[in-house]
Each structure stands twice: as C-alpha cells, then as structure tokens.
Image 1 (cartoon, rainbow, N blue to C red):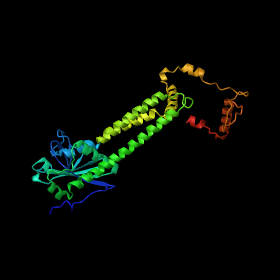
Image 2 (cartoon, helix red, strand yellow):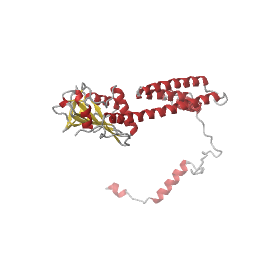
Image 3 (spheres, rainbow, N blue to C red):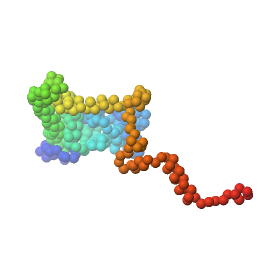
Image 4 (cartoon, helix red, strand yellow):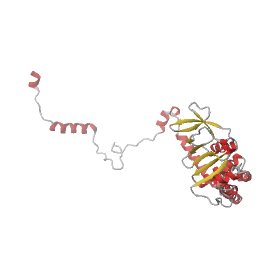
Length: 340
C-alpha cells in the first residue's frame, strides 16, 4: 500500500529526547574496514592491520563521522553481507548517541542512490540540532530530497515536505540559539562602550581607554563575521567569532583588568618565594634571620600552653630521675652467678 501525500506523517514539533531523520544517499566512495569482535565489529580505517572486513558507509554517514566531533570508534550492529551498503552502526559519546541504518529503497540496491539512511539521534536538543545543521551544511545539498519520490514516501511514511520541515525545525532551533547568543554579545558590546566613555582617570588610572576602544571595535567586526557565518550555516566559524568577541570584551572591561593586575602582583610574590635552592646564599639567609632574645632569668620565654621555665638545669633533672629509678630497682646479688 502506497502512502499518499495527504496520509503521510507531518512532523512539526521537536522531541525533547530523540530525533529520527531520513537521508538520501548520493554516492558511496568511502570504504572502511571492520575489526571483528564476536558477531559484531568496530569500524576502522580501510588499511587498519586488524581490519578483516569492509563496509561502504556512503556520503551521509561518512560526513556524519566527520562533523560529530570526538567519539569512540563506531560499532557495527548489523554486519554488511553480499550488499555492502546494507548495515546498521552506532556511534556517539557520553552525552549523545547516533544509530544509522542503511538499506535500499528502490532499484534492488544496484546504485549508490538506491540507498537511504535512517538516523536515530538521542541526546540534548541543543546538540542534536547543532549536529543536524552541521551535517546538512557539510553535505552541501538537502539530504531529505529523494531520488525516487513515490518509493521514498512508501518506505519512510512521510512526504518530501514533511521531511524538509523535520530537518529544518532542528536546523532553525540551532540558528535561533546562535542568534540569541549574537544578540547577547551585541548588547554587551554596547554596554561596554558606555562604561568606557563614562570612565574617569581617577577610577582606574592604570586602565588604557584607547586599547579598550580598539578591543570593542574588533569585537564589533567579529560580530559581523559571526552574522555572515550564521547566514551561511557555518556553525564552527560562528563559534570562533564568538570566542574572539569574548576575548575582546575581557580586554575592554576595566574591572577585569584591575583584577588581573592584582593577580599579577600576587604572582610576583609567588615567584620571589619560588627561588631555586642552588641560587640561595645560606649564610646570607642565616644572617638575615631574626634572633630570639634571652629572658632576664637565662631561660627561653615560652608563650601559650607550653610548660613555664623552672630554672632547673638538665643535669639536675637527670640526676633526680636517676635517684628515683635507683630506689625502685630491686637488689640482685650476682656474685654466685659469676663464680659458677
């Protein structure tokens, strides 16, 4: 039974936990190796010494591996058989997991374009949206557009417009998040300009207002760069521009500059004390060391809970202890023992 356009599922909301997307494979040039682990395997480079099998991922999944970021080697859940593009793999990190299933939907799988990829993504919505935006942008084409429209609707249960909406609501969610961050940084730049204009020499005499103004000008230029990168869906370039803006805002903040100066003074004190022992003049240090003064009673003046000075000498205490010990010791006559 073929699903018509009116009967197909329409997705217009974002799931808080997972996302299911369908992507059209266009080419299959990337071949990887499989290191077997029991009945499953781990994806390795094609020339890996432990790779005993092979798998062709296709352009969608190969690009997914590149844009995902740091992750463990993907594991193969369903190994490819005679048809190397029919498989199921999973990858991810501690926060987000992706499961990809590749299978043909027309033409008996004779061509690369005969295959589709079903992507199941679990994790935070912000990261899912960012990954989807990166994937679609890196592919350079709408991955939701099929080669065979009727077969696509029948297999996926969604028409082309629903697929487009489903991809775009995730991508727009990421774009809106970037726009919010962009507006926040624009506001911070304007507020910093007001602070620098009103700043007097008496408030922060060491603060250079000309350098602060130059830093804010750089931040404003990077703001334009971030906006252009966002228009091109270049999320990595947007984040790099944000990082430069944040650095410029720190340079233009007199309060942060003041704290940095205080921190530098503390660092200087630490460096003065952290002297190499080989470079220290021990005799000079002893000469500079404070000398304890003797009390009028020729004893050391003790403060606190320590016992007070009694004026007794060490020999007196020793002889007194010996007398007490001698009285306690029993007399033993060893004459007979020596004669034996």
